[in-house]
Length: 275
Image (tube, rainbow, N blue to C red; front, side):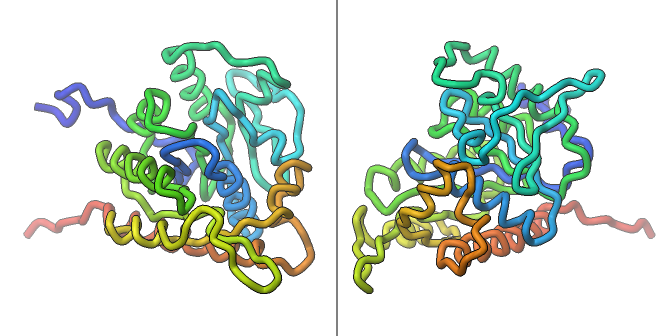
């Protein structure tokens, strides 16, 4: 029997893209897109060629967060991605702008995601970050079943509800045999008058990472400037002023790169030499 005899689809690489990192979450509202955007820009600041695919088709927030509201154009049979803050971008929000709801059904969405992955002229990229829709539904599964990921990053908050759904997201990646690089706990705490206030609970990300035998990649605190940056199209990591959030996201970028390289080495086939 061949490797795909059981109905499993082949995972086809994307020409020119060295590493694909999926950023997922079990539920919405945990700041997944904020993490994906600031992670991508931080990688670009480190000198890597980076693309960001906004696969959150029902709530594409990347155009607003990246401060770009244009329409991509086709060049021959390929779509030219837009670019902002040193990152190449593609999003449903560029094709379905404003507040008009998207009413496409699963098969159509799966088709357009494949177009975004394989018919966009990404060029030569060190990293393509995919901001997945929240949850563990058909769009997420189809995308990761057909795309060879270097690894996945799961975003959660410390709340019990978010953590329960984060565990489901980890299991989704494990089900399709894709490595999870680790967990990011977002909205970990709020700094107020020199004290840390644990608004959504304390230590949940670390406990879940330990339970799932995964590293905790970062604990990102709540910061109004991060929200303001996303709303204004100038993500927090683009600021020139010293900021704890900037330092944490840059550290997260380095950690993800290290974990991605380790994952590639682990899954690289070993060569044998015949006697």
